[in-house]
Amino acid sequence: MRFVCAVLLVFCTLPAISQKTDVPSCVSIEKAKDFIGQDVCIVGKVFRVGFSDTGTAFITFCEDYKHCPFSAVVFNRDMDKVGNLQSLEGRELEVTGRVKDFNGTAEIVVKKRSQLSGEAVSPSLGRDSNPRTGNWHR
Image (tube, rainbow, N blue to C red; front, side, top):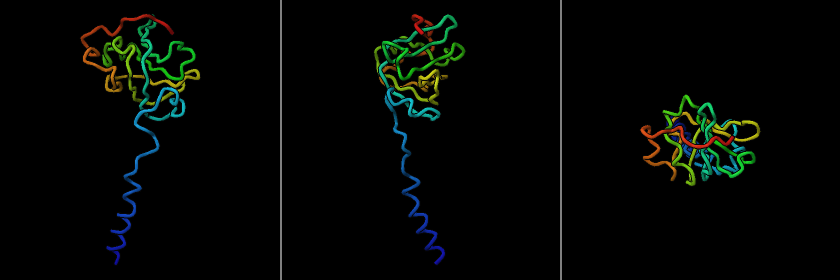
């Protein structure tokens, strides 16, 4: 009898265990702020990739980055692990990582190439090309 109860308990809890969480596979840049503090995939069309004087890359998804709900950042120390970012402009990009609040904007810090996927990621995003080209705009 105990065995039957144990088997029933296992079968009754399997659907609850196998259900997916409420976090979708990718969310739009407009919804990124709803996932601050969570690991999630954010998807959007890259408007521009710009670089600061220190080599930090800013991947923006809006013409006016100051009013954009989401951006991705690649610090200079991680640039060699991420690769060339110029090929991203004008293409849809999926950025995966922990969403943080940076001055009221949702942001993901990209530390490795595997955090980037989607239409924008191509072989030209490899390590052999110069990752530090582009205009500073932030």
